[in-house]
View 1 (cartoon, rainbow, N blue to C red):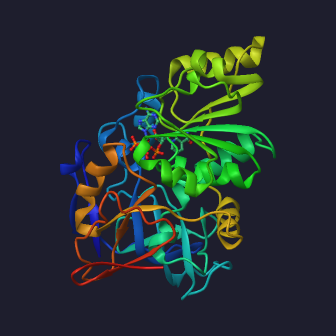
View 2 (cartoon, rainbow, N blue to C red; view 1 turned 90 degrees about the horizontal axis):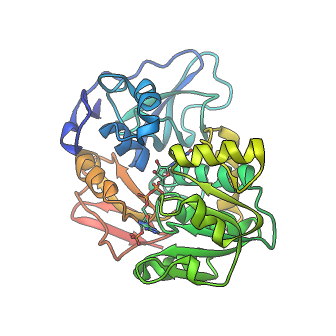
Length: 352
Ligand SMILES: NC(=O)c1ccc[n+]([C@@H]2O[C@H](COP(=O)([O-])OP(=O)(O)OC[C@H]3O[C@@H](n4cnc5c(N)ncnc54)[C@H](OP(=O)(O)O)[C@@H]3O)[C@@H](O)[C@H]2O)c1
């Protein structure tokens, strides 16, 4: 099968389109024909071994000490089940599924255990849209619902509100009943509002510290805030939730837990099928929609990595494995939340 492969850490140039053996379907596994996958921040960080200094060793132990443990990158996927192992009960051939495998998804086929992070794909979504959901959706759901326990009427500040996680965080905080203030650039203010933000702060010209509003939760998806700054804008007892963390946040989180003080929560979201099902339900209820910035064909994964690594993406960057897909990308100002983008021989055709 065709797959993107890499055997060393480095820039996007270490990735190339190659041939890989078709994955074997274990007894408790399903074989998925991948119609769409994606490139996320996790993917480029693993490709570049770019971990915060404090997490360098744990990061390398996880991804491979000297070279990538998994040759095929790509964590998010959506596609159709083509084969099931003998013990599989949840799925059957022909089922449309989406999920998060951590690696192996930038390929034509992927084998994954039926009890891993995989669920029936929301019927109303195209494969490209379904593949845009898991990374950002799962992180936003677990951080806001489980770690912060956001409740109706709370004020939530989302920093990086139109990025891979932020674009889902705005929608999920809103769905949990919060009033959302989005921090993003002015050009993306319309998108943040469209996703449910009540107020928008352009980080190029203003700081949340300049505003009188105080927050129950500050969810920083980009690493732009620190503990003292968050403290200045949190209500008493409010929570700072940094998605990117290093030694200072770890110190404050431990200190707060042991001796009291500013509440800081650091964590990593687990990737669970039941949370995917919650995301699918939210899509069904109209509370959540995928946000797709660009769509690249499989052979252009290196370009997609370079784009995502610039850290100005809006929602997800999707990879399609459809045969003959044109090397098309939506224009950067053409973010199309909730639209179906169908690759056609000479470009991308957008349909509502
Ligand atoms: N702990 C966990 O379990 C977990 C899970 C998932 C992700 N993560 C981590 O979370 C981080 C977020 O990932 P992501 O994929 O959402 O990032 P991303 O998509 O690269 O973020 C890009 C967004 O950040 C915005 N941005 C850049 N600088 C900003 C600033 N100073 N203030 C406000 N917004 C700014 C950009 O807006 P403009 O284009 O308008 O500038 C863009 O919308 C990553 O480091 C990832 O590794 C952790």
